[in-house]
Amino acid sequence: MAPSTVTHPCDPVDLAFVDTASHRFSNSVALRITPEQLFEVLADASAWPRWAKVITHVEWTTPEPRGVGTTRTVTMRGGLVGEEEFLAWEEHTLLAFRFNSASEKRIRAFAERYDVVATPTGCTLTWTLALDVTGAARLTLTPSRPVLNVTFRWFLRNLRRYTDRRFAVS
Image (cartoon, one colour):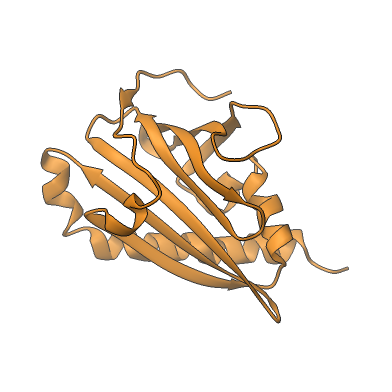
């Protein structure tokens, strides 16, 4: 169970925010699994902490079937909690969500998009994270961009290792 925490409302951004945010990070990874298998992983709450090591807990807060409007709570290291709502859910091709609220009030807006393209050997995932922050966070985010981007690429390498193990052919 995710810990209870005070949350602050975030701007209710739409999918266009992912392309227009003041701070964006976009990285891709080639995976040796099908888009269907990738969506199985992305829908599995227990899988997220295994590859995105900043995440400690994911809890779906609306019942299946999942789609646009589905919500979940994500708890991260350092005590950050985000209450998320899915903006797009196109099976096997696109997922996107935003924070409706966050435990950190300096997060003005936050959204992520997962674009999936089938390839002859599996699929390619392009993960784009977008955010807008307030206060001193604006001053520290820009110089820390290279480190954050390396971290996000590391998460995708972890995802590939995780999916290679999860879907290994015996």
